[in-house]
Picture 1 (cartoon, rainbow over the protein chains, first blue to last red):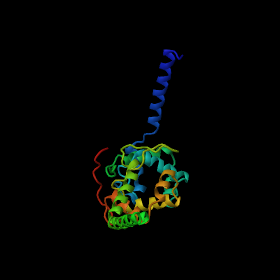
Picture 2 (picture 1 turned 180 degrees about the vertical axis):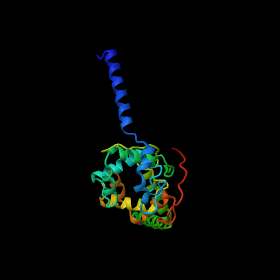
Picture 3 (picture 1 turned 90 degrees about the vertical axis):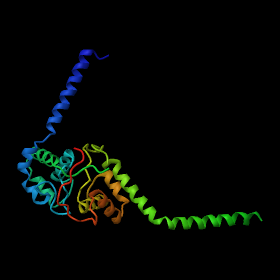
Picture 4 (picture 1 turned 30 degrees about the vertical axis):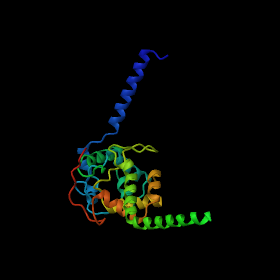
Length: 112
Length: 125
């Protein structure tokens, strides 16, 4: 049997752990805006792209954008334009901020 | 002869089936597209739906996405150039025409490649 005290400690650790990982996963949209100039050249100043071949980013799910940029950076997703762009992002923080910025815009939606 | 009594109705049924099939071919295409859309919606039509493996993140929103981009993404999944198991399986059975029709449905763009200048208002955050 786990004692009540031990259970409380386990729960507290779980809550703290969840908070820390939530913090670590969230970017700063304002910081992202300042880093977004290279993105805007193709994806548009407001995340609505300038060409039908480039995806809109405005309103896209934040964690999907994070995953996509990491995949480009790590070579898991191949694209001659996006691979060098993502590799130029020196820190993971840059990816988080950019994702937060584009996710905060209005555009894409869940069609159902 | 019992055999004739059976064969007659069987041929009549076959003829009727063939007629019904060709008459409903157009309707079948429509149903097929709706079924393919329903396959997409199983994940992409649900707010906050997440991938399960190997990484967990929300599946991308498709509403208002560029049609030509959706087609190129589906082709990359089908060829394996873009490696994600679930989408590779989904795209495997799609023809070029299916991809175009699905892209038009999700983008809201008729004709498949027209640029969309203004962002659409998201109905929900």
